[in-house]
Image 1 (cartoon, rainbow, N blue to C red):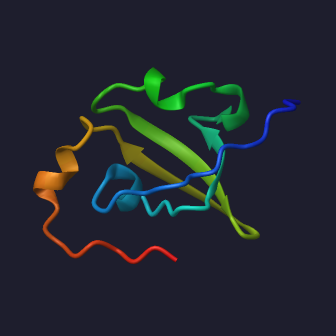
Image 2: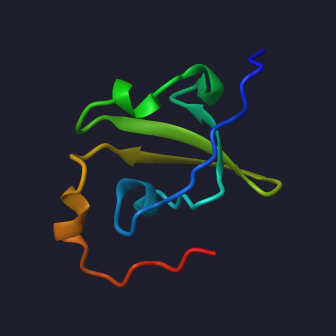
Length: 88
């Protein structure tokens, strides 16, 4: 069992893969592709464009499973055709 804390999402950019997957600022990342998120020092460095990431987060008392597809940083800006979501 890891002594490290679970990572907390601090920002979800509008129209980003995380936004499209339903992630929110404040979500606690529990697992990435079945691995304990505390054991992955830099999870996004292990990913590649087009890779699907299976993610479990805790939001309050609820555990949410979702997935996102990696894209090049910033690619969502040009494709964003809707108003940005409101963050709580």
